[in-house]
Length: 168
Image (tube, rainbow, N blue to C red; front, side, top):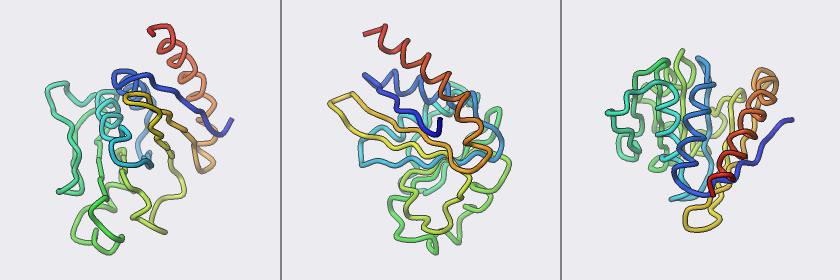
């Protein structure tokens, strides 16, 4: 299995999915979040932060103006929001290489702005708006290591999907 489609009936379910994925992440993981404005990328990242052990009292916000926010947890979380840049050359004054190629976890909103610099070894999560709170998230692993891990992720996600449906 190379991808998994997750249907979220609401914000709490999307956060819970992020938290579960955060619990599975390893040093060096890169997550590319694809989707239009208000599709839930930052909300999902809040869940990832909790799954990585970022303290609940730490506010996880979109780095729309700062470009990169950092959070300490089990692994260091780098949250990049590239919406306001037009290309990778605008990242030069920022520690973006440490974010993508270090020992932490990188979550990238608007990853298309990286162009050819987007790592080939990554997780893609594509968000679709299907209603006021409903979202679909297509999760796929790219690179040999992530394709191997995808089977474990799919099993966990399937169980979480069943939980979400049972709560409706």
